[in-house]
Amino acid sequence: MIDLPRELKRRVALVEAGLARHVPSAETRPSRLHAAMRYSLEAGGKRVRPVLVLAAAELCGAAPERALPAAVAIECVHTYSLIHDDLPCLDNDDLRRGRPTAHKAFDEATALLAGDALLTHAFALLAQAHAAEAGLAHALIRELADAAGSQRLIGGQMEDVLAEEKADATAAELEFIHLNKTAAMLEASLVMGGLVAGAPASALGHLRTTGRELGLAFQIVDDVLDATADSATLGKTAGKDARAGKTTYVRLHGIEASQRMAAEHTRSALSALAQVPGDRDFLTALIEALVHRAA
Amino acid sequence: MIDLPRELKRRVALVEAGLARHVPSAETRPSRLHAAMRYSLEAGGKRVRPVLVLAAAELCGAAPERALPAAVAIECVHTYSLIHDDLPCLDNDDLRRGRPTAHKAFDEATALLAGDALLTHAFALLAQAHAAEAGLAHALIRELADAAGSQRLIGGQMEDVLAEEKADATAAELEFIHLNKTAAMLEASLVMGGLVAGAPASALGHLRTTGRELGLAFQIVDDVLDATADSATLGKTAGKDARAGKTTYVRLHGIEASQRMAAEHTRSALSALAQVPGDRDFLTALIEALVHRAA
Image (cartoon, rainbow over all chains, first blue to last red):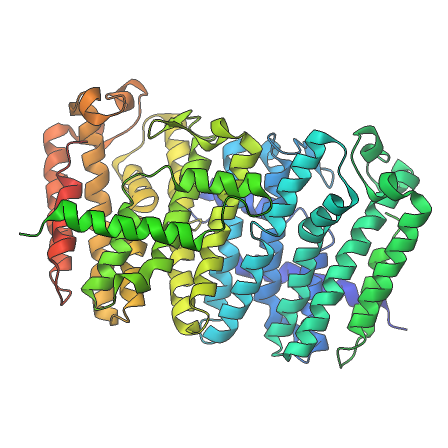
């Protein structure tokens, strides 16, 4: 068995160093904009997506350092999506991870522009860090732009907004939301790691399936935790979904069936991963920890 | 002398066809999102930036059709910046070109996401349209991401917001805003056209200077028109800047000096352009029309 906390900590430290290095400093003109970008990037979180990038690159034979620009780019896109999601016209959240959201710490105009800037920076960074490898830069940018685009990440966000308005989404609509709002970026994380390592198309296909199934399992577990855990364990208000009348897997299928579905998607993720040659110990342990988490 | 209206019309028609072809249809799921993207793209305007892309490509020896994905990508980024600028937390404009702005025609959440989606689509389109030419895709994406990034387009927008708050920007601050909010995308338009045509570095450098000087001239002319033209000629409310207490070239330097500065930047633009070999008639006529416009 590997020491997951230790292995995870090492990679998170690498990601933090990458963020410090590959994003303009808070003093860069205009400093208010760059301070807001860094404020949100530095709010922490589990760094799940960038760690998946590094882990997939390592699995396919590259040093994690080589995947750092791709990992930072993914985290920039994830952070932009959180900043825009938190804005008053979407979720109107004042707090994220216990800290004021960007539009509370700064203001709405700055938060909007900081999100725009982080999204744009992801593409600039990939183009610049891989300037001498145009083929790789091109493949990474194409993967990220598709995953973050109007038919995936943003499309999932749009359908989430529409589902909340009508308050009775179908199972198919819920799956569309999760496939695109959650799974798309997990897929892209693993695939981009594979691309950096020059993995063959077959391995990239298995990594994509792993990411999609992990994304679905992760989201169902989220729904189950919201319905079953208490707020203290969760570190945030439990039972929020039910009170908001939000359509969730638990509401559509019940707790037991949801747990079975999460286990099913986890098995599919691990069996796809098992087809990628290499040392899979860290990624396997990470996926199991993500779906068996208590909070 | 060339027939500018006819030559312009032909290229605008090509741009319109490119937009129809290279952006997902309004029926694409989620249709509300794609309908909002197309609503704003189809609001028209003069298509200055995409026409500059085609014109630079032609000047450097490529067929305009070949530059169409780059032209559409530039227009997607320009349109995203207008949608986000119009939002209540920035300029809070209800009308643009006589039609309701995106957040009025749809709602704020949809407008925010449609802007995000257009920005992302620009990069996806460049990666996809030039999939077989990774070097070109890479160069185009790098140019666009830099021009649209936190130190150029978005940086200029941020400083514009900050200048409005303090209401007494310096000449240096005003130049930063115009260089980045206006000139950056005009530079990128001409350079991307040159890149598509495989122009040498020297020509790309002259095209960049042409774009920067044109951008500065264009913006000063805008300020002068706001202070001197009547609303009927302008097609929008004249004197808005002065009433809003906004810092402009006219407020800082007076009308006559502003006119002299615009003429100076125009001369610089045309003399840089004169160093690019090829048939410059259309681009020269277009630049002169843009800075000698009455509205």
